[in-house]
Amino acid sequence: EAQVTQNPRYLITVTGKKLTVTCSQNMNHEYMSWYRQDPGLGLRQIYYSMNVEVTDKGDVPEGYKVSRKEKRNFPLILESPSPNQTSLYFCASSITRGKAGQPQHFGDGTRLSIL
Amino acid sequence: AQKVTQAQTEISVVEKEDVTLDCVYETRDTTYYLFWYKQPPSGELVFLIRRNSFDEQNEISGRYSWNFQKSTSSFNFTITASQVVDSAVYFCALSEAGTGTASKLTFGTGTRLQVTL
Image (cartoon, rainbow over all chains, first blue to last red):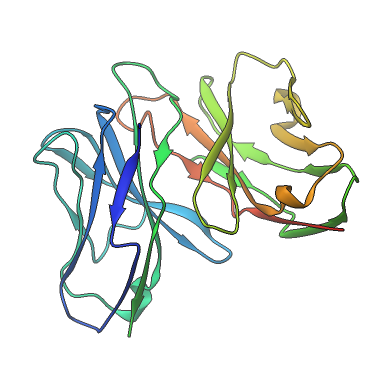
């Protein structure tokens, strides 16, 4: 089954304790992206990757890191989480190969609470 | 810069009523794509439809229909004979076809639809 898998689904942690949210897709997609969803703000892009070893900042990258060492994986790293990073996070992927506007497939979301 | 506005924060209807969710977008690109996603109470995001800027034909899929009007920069979504299962947050999104960020989605703030019996 084609899917984007995020882990963990839920996490409560404390300020300053490094955490990683994993994202894996099995569709051989080139493009992967992370979004955060906050009430009244919709979804905003954090980072994206056009392919292996190619990553770039989205609209709200502060406090986050990513890496793309393999095509299928795109982890989101919070080196020193703070309460303002409490949010619902989504990983997404899509095929590109010169085709703009392809629908993105989303993971089920990770709800992070930073105390 | 691209922008999507969903002015309706929350809509409540009674089952079987028709409801239209509004979406207004801004872009300087001549080639762009518009999307609707559904987020049910379980939280996942479900892709509903994609439209490119060169195709202004309205689309109907069962009880769902979409009206794309470039003249008013709108891409509205109508649910006919709403059902309780339609209760969800609906997001409109825009993707520009420029290089580099061709797949980036800019989302509206969402419209929460509540359908009651």
